[in-house]
Every structure is written in structure tokens, then in C-alpha cells.
Amino acid sequence: MNGRKPFWRRPSWWLAAAVAARNVNGLRQVRQTLARVDRPAPLSAVEPMVLHVVIPVLREQQHIAGALAWFVPLLRNFPGSTLTLVSTAREERERTHLVGRLAGATATDLTVQHFPQLTDDELTALAEALAKTGERTLTLTTAAEVLSTFPTTADVIASEIARLREPVVRHVHYEGDGRKAAQVNAAVEQLGADSAEEYVAVYDVDSRPSPELLQRTAEFLARRRAEDGELPRVVQQSARFATQGAADTWWERALCRGAARAQTLWTLRREIPNLRRYADSARRARGGRGLAQTVGHGLLVRTDVFRQIGGLPTFTVLDDVAFGYRLTLGDIPVDSLPFTTTVPAAEYLPELLSQSERWFQSYLDYPQCAARWRAQGRGSRLDHAAALTIGAYRGMAWLLVSPATAACLALALSPRTRPPARAAATVALWAATVAPVRLLAEAEGRPLTVRETATQSAETLAGLLLKSIGPMTALGRWAATSTRHSALAPKSNRRTKDRETQ
Image: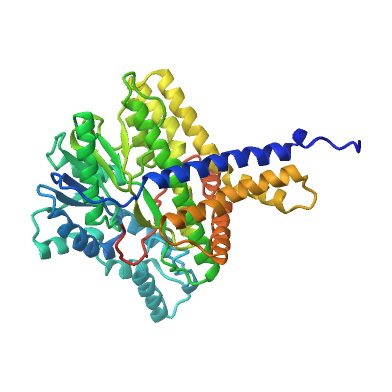
């Protein structure tokens, strides 16, 4: 005996084994999900559904025309459907705040990294105005004058609607201080629809659901009605993520591609399986256990259900995951469509980290959800305890993705690692990167070469190593400032090209 501990008594072994077990199970979920979703099948003739598409917008002037050009012809195939664009007075207040931040900015400060809320044209105009003044920094007056020359999103919507003269298109201007959820609720209040046959459909301004996607959605709804005797109450269109390579440097493009692929794999590995399990549980006679985790893009809610539960929550920092908590308390199933859509992903590292930080805020909203709805008598103590436990587990799993991945990488590469721990760490990394990347490519009909596998696996690994930074930042900011609210809505201005997503 050399006095060394057996491998099974070393923490490194148990760490690697635990991560490997979780990742292998996740790989199994990816395989099962890919076997169910996005499978080609002939469309059958069904009655068109009625959709009231609601698109909340903020600082998105340049995307309005593209959204109208896409959705107006699309909804003509669904009689009775409408499109509502919801602007907000918050945009004017945030512009004033931005002017204050711009005062004292130098030419090198006028970049997307420093001011992601501004468009490229606005940044260019500010730089040109600064150069004309001959000053070293922008003044409050100059910044205000430049931004005032650009129309607000509300101005652009009003102009485009007047040009189109389409009766199916509506414009609601929200005057309150709320954010996306409040904008959606304001739009639904003016719809006048309260039917078990119609849906509120929440999309982003850069969403491009294809005609085939909506036809397949109608087919899915008809199939569920035949099985359940009624239309599904809530339906989630899950998304894959893709970048367009907008960053200037190769490493930033590669990093954002890897992060987008990692997020797509999370959708296939966690989001869709969790929704399927929750829906199955909620349909049982005694009600369900679990926690629905809805997302704000591609969310369809029957109008009667939307009004019954009081719309989207407005008391939380974000609304989509909190909405899932409210659905869980009512044992309302959330059906996951057996096909996905593709949405634009973050193109720059600061945007990627900011987005991750913003999304993690949803997990920090769960205690507030429990306190608010428990006080209103919604849900039992057991319901709230179960939801909070699941939410805490999911949030902690996200927080630990990067540390766990880094630890396994170190164990796999270190010459001092014992063979069993090295093997477990290698399996963990393989199940998180190489195997799912190849599965994803094969499902998309484009098998990878060895070189492509290595490149995409390395990108995905980098994305996983960064995945926990946003959540850690969210927790750190909360601890340092005692608040999670900000003067500016936590979103950047979309700079991706207008494109069709399936």
C-alpha cells in the first residue's frame, strides 16, 4: 500500500462523477427531444386559429417596418386575427436618462459596448456632432439635440400604420412605468376578446414565425382539442438560437456561436422535457406537481385564461418565468409544441453577459412570487414549497455550470488526476459538448467532419465556461445595491439583420 486514498474517497472523483451523471442524463434528454421535435410530416387541413399577436417594443424603431411586412400578410391566412404593437412612454423617459449618461462621453466612448441601448445611426450621429463642436466630450445640450432628431418607436409605429391602413394592425401606447408584461397586459385590455377559441400570442419584434410554423401550430391545437375536448390553455413555442457573425473579431464570433449553441442545447435538454413532464402531471386527475417555466417569446395563451389569471405578472423584474409559477399554482398545463423556431442570439460578449444576467433575474423573482400569491391565498404551502425548491435547484444548476465545467476540464487535463476521476471528467465534458453537438448537427441534416466537430465542441465548451458569469453578476449586483431594478430596461438594441426564422 502506498498510503494514497482510494479514488472513491476523493472529492474530485465524486465531483466529476456527479457532473458526468447529470450531463449523460442531459444527453439522453437531448436525444429523446430530437426524436420528437421538428420531424417532417405532411400538413393536414384544419380550421385556422385566431391569434391576437402582441409585440411589445422599446427602442426598436428600425425593426417596425420589417415586423409589419412579415406579420400582416401572415395573419391574413388566419381570419379574425390581429396584430398589436405596444410602444411605451418609458422610452421617452429612458432617452432623457441616456442623455444624462452621454454628457461627458468622449469619441471612444460612443460604441455599442458602452451604449448598447442606442442604434448604430444614433451613435454615428453623436460622434459626428461631437467632432463638429471641436470639444473633447459631449455636452448635455448636444446629446439631447442629436437624439431628439430621431423618431421614437411610437412615432415610427404611427407613421407605418398610417401608411399601411390595415384594419388588423393596432397601436397601443402604454403610459405607465411597467415593462414588457405591463405593455402586453395593456394591449390585451383593449382587445375585448375573452374566448376559449382565441389566443394571445406574445412575440418579439424580431420574431419571424413562418406560415408553416403557424399552420403546424393550428394542427397541434386541433389534435389536442380532439383528445382533451377543449383547446390547450397555454402553448409554448420553444426556440433554438443562432448568431449572424456580427462581431468584428473571430474569437467574439466563435464565443457567441458557442453560447448560442449551448442555449439551444439547454432548450432541448431542459426546457422542452420539463414542459412535457409538467403538462403530463397537470393533466392528471389530482393536479400536477412541478414548475412550469414559460418564456416570453412564442407564448400562446387562450384569451379567457389570460384574463382569468390576471395577465402577466408586473410586480417582478421579469415576467415570463413568473408567469409559469402562476400557471403552476392553477394546475394549468403548458403544452410544448413538437417543433421549434429559431431566434437571434447575442452577437457581442457584453450583450451576451448582460442577457445572461437579465435572464437569471427570473430565478430571483421566485420568492417574491411565493410571497405575493401565498398572501392572496393562491396555492397551498406544499405547492409553494415544491415550486421554490424546484426553482432553487434550477437556479443553482445554472450558477454551477461554469465552475463544474471548469473543474472537469482541469481534472481531465491535469497529469496528477487519478484515472477514474479523469475518465469521469472526460465523460462529463464529452456528454456536454461533443456528443450533443453531433446529435444536433445530424438532426439538422448536416453531419459534421472531425474538424467541424472539434471546432463546434470547443465553441460550445467556451459558451459553457461563460454561462454562469451573468448569474453571478446578477447576484453580486443585488448584494451590492440591494435592488435589482435599473433606470434602463435591461435590454440592448437589436442589431441583427432582419431575417426569416423557421
